[in-house]
Length: 304
Image (cartoon, rainbow, N blue to C red; front, side, top):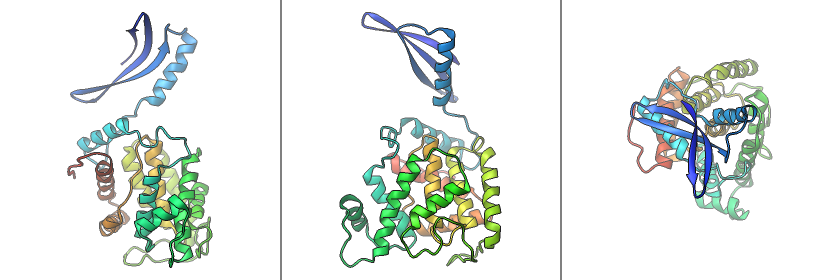
């Protein structure tokens, strides 16, 4: 329900455009747009309606996470302040350090959390470490800067640009383009598709993404897209890091805070990717939801 609300503050009255949204059988949330000290004329009021539409969370029917878990995620989206008060291209340094350390450590980068912080905070390369490991840390920051400033849509060029930012100035043979050779994933039974099929599979994925972004809960959508990139394995290197960055791009586009996949959960993480390779996206979607709640709330609970 949408209506105009009149409030008195001191000697003056002020008007708000208000929309009430029922988020559960017992809870209603209100979204307000300030109109001023008068109700605007019809044409001007339409602009406020459009702004209200943009600020109104879309209702999603979760497919893989439970209704209760989806409601807790939506509560977090409304309450979360991370990134929202920052300029579009800035990244909180604490988050950047922890994300970069964990996402690189999952792929085998041996730098410690403290060494990663030294590089990102002070621009100092620790003694005795390989230059390429340091470059990967700096590349991670550049990739986040690009991601935060990107205003376009999902596309193959977008994916290639992220992979380029991650792998530039490293030994990765193909930077910013899809792979041209067959690859294998060490420790996994999944065999990625032949390189000649990669461009078509990526375009198919993007085609599937477009309707799903209007149906899946955003956290489920982020999990699905992550899984599809990992499954196609479109690049010669940087697939996991690209998938985790794109996952967070989806989350932030939909008003959710970004998530860190902790390296301590590496084995569980890989197991859930393998389940997704078999067509079951629920385990990773639930895991991602729980990770978000654990990182941004005091109590995450358990849900399946």
